[in-house]
Length: 442
Image 1 (cartoon, rainbow, N blue to C red):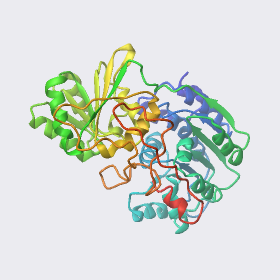
Image 2 (image 1 turned 180 degrees about the vertical axis):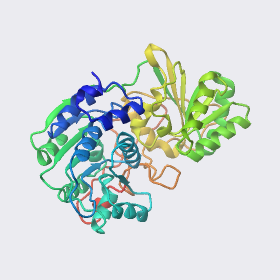
Image 3 (image 1 turned 90 degrees about the horizontal axis):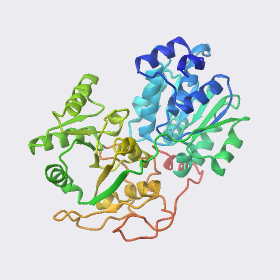
Image 4 (image 1 turned 90 degrees about the vertical axis):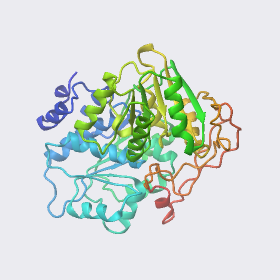
């Protein structure tokens, strides 16, 4: 099967060809024809299965074919997502797919200035990608009008429910026309997702595909506890004495990746960095140096590393834990491929325990915790530590309700070497004015 056989327009096929997409993934092959036919759709797909194109391509085709209403351009498609990272990723993907269409894509999320978003909304929007809390802010201030929405997408609906966004979602959906197409994507079809579908969808078709980002059982997961200020020294020690093969190192921010690569170079360890501020030519040059062995270490952010094809990579190091647990799967998926053994090594500071717990719950397996002699942290890792409100860049990276603790782990923590604690109770938005905004400002 090819994208041509799915009934997509020449403009979309041209954009897909330019981005080297030739064969649809299973979720795309099943969902796109149903969405193009106008059905409401309940899609079961995890991160990494290609679901953005599964809803984005038919959405773009529908809007491009229809003449927009007269007057100021208001959003004709609304895509709700749980986190800032996903909002940026979805927005970028839609812009790439729709590069040959005259459609405007705008993203709004917390942790960024209101005024640039207000200006974008005033100039006119065809497709709005939004986190619930910031969208409510714009709605209440009169900047976002949803009465022209024809297509509504709820992306990663299970995560939005996990993070307490249900009251915010209901307030938003009450302002969207009932005569619309609704596409809901979730990793699971648990009862609460089906209840949401029954409440907001009309006879949805259901498709579900197995995840193609399952964690290989040949990967060893390991944690080195260390104080945040000594991570660099420990990384140099690891790369200089214990691991001499090619290594992919993940950092949290663009600036942090640059700084880390420079520090490794000064320590005599050839390293290059790739991130969103690098041009495509710079990224390709860095990747070529890494693949050719001129640079043994590639330091990357999550977004820049998406889609990298690096065969035979024995080790992935998380200098900083990802803010979203699913990104851990994307990171370590670069090692342990095709039956080969691999190692996923994470340098974890005591205050990053909440992030570690998220990963632990997702893996449903023990993580070996090894303290390196000479690098023992000043205090134990606290698995009940709250999720950080930002990723160190001044912007909130996780869509968790402001000031609310991380979710409670089910059962005892599965990380060896850590003391189990009773987790805090999970908080939900109350639906009262203001509380839903606090519970959804991603």
